[in-house]
Amino acid sequence: MKLSFSTLGCPEYDLDQVIDIANRCGYDGVEIRMIRGESALHTLEEFGPAQIGPTLDKFKRHGLEVVCISTGVRFTSLDHEEFKEQQDLTRLNVDIAVGLGAKCIRVFGGPLPKNQDRAETFKRIREGLAFAAQVGERHGVQVLLETHDDFSTSQQILELLGDAEIENLGILWDVLHPYRHGEAFAETFKALGPRIGHVHVKDSAHFSKDGFDLTLVGEGRLPIGEAVELLQNGGYQGYLSLEWEKAWHPEIPDAEVAFPHYVEAMKQYLSR
Image (cartoon, rainbow, N blue to C red):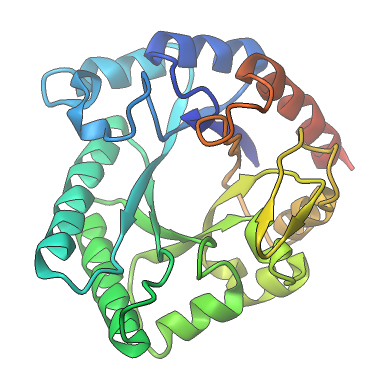
């Protein structure tokens, strides 16, 4: 398994700064969520048609793989125009993934709107996921549904998908969210293991289904080593990606502290 980080942990960095810290800390790859404070990556010239080739070359010259394009796409709305906007965002992000050689994009199931019929919302989300998966498949990019929001646990995800067979749809296992909702790592992995295409690692000292704090990996109460062991024994060959949510929690330590710490902590877990 290899190590990466999400640029959510260094949201104001430009590409050169991202590459620099990745090289200094010994990372194998980078997961792109924000650059220069912007999460709408399709609006940035670095990822536009004229510059995406040189952007990819820059990562390659420094021995880094672009692992995943972490979008904010979600298909919960029953409004036709909003649904179409999410479809358009899917296409744009798949194009970025193709241009940067990323094997996957992340999407959300999302929090369920309280004013919508549950069954109709589930149907709409499945329709959106199927659309995204088809777009990705045409371009060799897998679509990954993250364990997050109202679909944090494997039980919630399996209820959403039901009997739907959506080709090219995998799972991004964020290890915190199922666990803080009361689902053991072993239970999550048993249900979703074969579908896992990417992993987000984070740690927390105080967490419940209602919220969580963030600690440096290894300094919280999550049994990270157990998750690593499950993945190793299950034959997972992908990335263990630090999702350090600095963009959403500015009070936590900076990337210059969290990023090197993660590499050292994960080396210990991986060597056990």
